[in-house]
Length: 325
Image 1 (cartoon, rainbow, N blue to C red):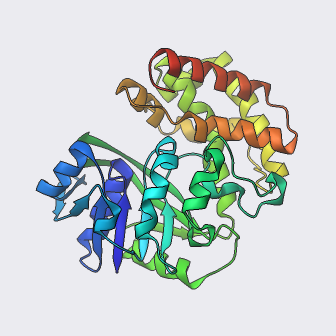
Image 2: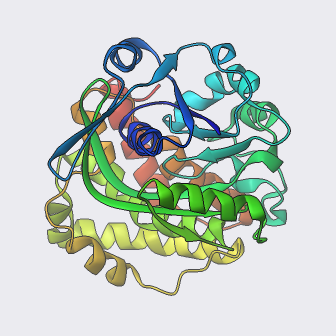
């Protein structure tokens, strides 16, 4: 089996290293810069449970080097994909599965969804560039529940979680999802097959949508965010708006914001991914995590004053710090 990991950062590197370690697949990486050089010279590297896993890697910055793949895992930041997507065509054949392991609302979310008019979301797929480059029927949805980081280019540090939720965007059962689940379980992941993958995307986003930008703006860990009564109340208002949007797109959530905050509080004093990006001077994934929710709200007729304020503040923070275009 031929597998290509597009973007070998924390999540892509974690997936690539575990899949390559099984020895049952030819796992390559499409990467660039220092990460590309590290993969070429040192292979896949993953520090997990106090041990270093190291496996040789085929790596390139040119998709034509690899040819058509059986599985393409896309693990780049959402804002990078519109420019990158057209260059991925050499990897894609009639039977290729595309698995987006990304944060926020993915580009395929509005496909075949009447409530959103079947049109790509401009916030995550401006001009429909990604949808044009990657056939919709090749996509299997994915939600990642993993905490990992890179301590240096090409070296992944796993913290917690091995959870992957996968499913057909249209909600049907399929042999390819069953086969993919078996492959990922064999690589050590906790895999759940879902008939409501859009809901799973929305549920994860429901908490991350506020936690990420608020922590990035303030520099606070999540325990500090939740300890501030006014900030917690503001986050709850934004979550209620997102919940109302979810009802309109068949992604209604039974929990209350307080329920979700109680779950988050159990994780302790952690830094969100957006705060980590801000501290490292990396572009923040604001459009897929907040902008897309705002755009979906506009399409389905739900007013979002709290989400609008959150997006505006985070956008201004990003622009003044050179973290958002």
